[in-house]
Image 1: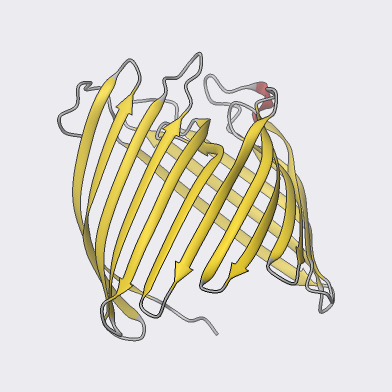
Image 2: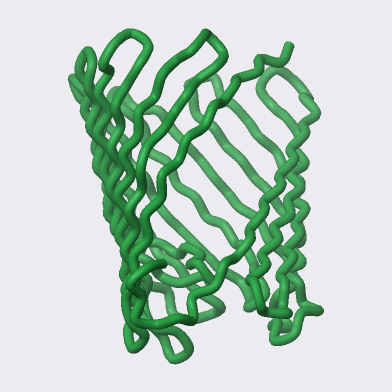
Length: 273
């Protein structure tokens, strides 16, 4: 960050690894095993965090298009780390059900996850509608962070598409990890504009704004991001992209900072048979 009124911002490293495998009982039912690991390391801080999880469950598809998923397992939120809670290790799982409707679908989900501080519980109901030129979705629910009283969560998603242009907007209230890998209630606004310049190239602009709630041990943080990029399809499998990013961060009782970046990359898609 440049022009920062506080010099205490540090770099961090985060890695996520997930593996899922299934055994198909019949054409509509599968037994699924999910394995996951997350590592977070902050430069200059001794307490690296390693979270591991294993869950087993069932996925079921019904004749009317409905879907059901169930998982139960164990998560180790690095309880041996300094400052970790005794609730960092324990059972986790989720229930999910989706039912198609004449227009769109309705779904409901209940899940419990864990980190080094304790358990995070969520419940939500989601309704999606197909519009003539796009879609809209509404999510309403509640979440509890480390055994606290449940608080409102929810969101609204809207998208519109034409022959060569797409526009989307989303507002959300949920529990998300911040740059210090601490889960906090966060309100976010985001939008994307995409325009196909030719059959092989596109211009994309992304805008987002996040507000992480303050608490007794953390300050409120406001962050805004703007990213503009150019994409070009070199071949059927190879893609090129380049652009610029601007990020502004303001932490209560600490100060502000801004960061600019120029990025360039080439990607390739692989089809596995």
